[in-house]
Image (cartoon, rainbow, N blue to C red):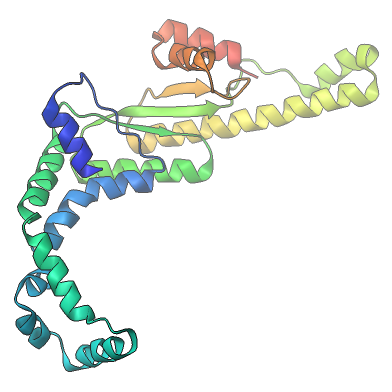
Length: 249
């Protein structure tokens, strides 16, 4: 993935490159990979295997040597020798790996790069988003903002479920009216939970105005769904308020 990102950036054929890494731990792997690769290629273990096999064998302790000897007798494979041959063959590629790792690290820290944290209001994703934001801050990476998806939106003025039940009693009957009232109460609880989660995310990430995408009526799997998402992602403040009000419970 590092090599591909480096290649696409060097080609210069695209106005923007979007790297999508759900969940956040995969994004953290990508952030840390350039340093890990560089550390590996400059580490003592690799230098040992790049040395002649005889020297590598001397560096390995007696206990480890016994293990390799037993493996050779059982499997017929001289593992230590094969590893040394493999890593010496890899040696010719190390400079290229180093170049790509350094190049990608520079890309990730470039002011033209922007990290958007996309999460949902559930507890675990919220915790991961806050942790990832902290990692970006520690690495001095450019943070572009927060997007909270699939949010139950709380109405500015909530109806009392008991009043709704009473209003529907004659038309729907006791059982169905009670189910409607119960559903409304549950949705209001979810909306209150999500509102608290968004407030926590805003406070912990430092984004005072996160982009809120409400829970839509159906899954996003076609162009119409993408258009609906687009309306929320790129709406003006006035349009956003109207869209969220229409989606409120």
